[in-house]
Length: 167
Image 1 (cartoon, rainbow, N blue to C red):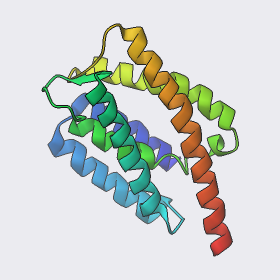
Image 2 (cartoon, one colour; image 1 turned 30 degrees about the vertical axis):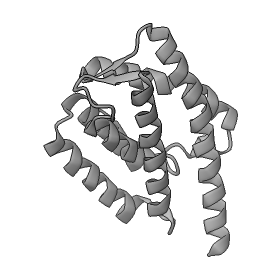
Image 3 (cartoon, rainbow, N blue to C red; image 1 turned 60 degrees about the horizontal axis):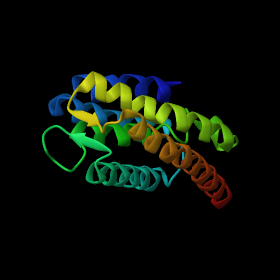
């Protein structure tokens, strides 16, 4: 419950407030709380780092391909979006644990809520724009998220099983 609640707080802080002086300390505090009180698996930092790097890399490719545009002119995701990836990574083995055994559900939810989150985030934040025509950008994001959310869910399950068996 705490994991989901912290992400529900992190999303608007990262997207709407989007001020480095608040986003970074909140993300670090969330990471501390997660690692100290929520995460119960020894390889959690490695998992978080892997999801974070993968996610930021995907977004970087999307910015460089023009699917999304950073209004600052940078070809890299803005800092708030980078921090959002770390906050999202913390949910995959805990509040989104249901998806680990329901990969088809992860694909459906990822295909819908992934692009919905980007669309809402770009609308509320204003520093990022989805390429026009909008349906193409949303279609690309939908396909990507319909693939990566079940991939993350599958890997989370495999890693959890391996960690439990190793102990």
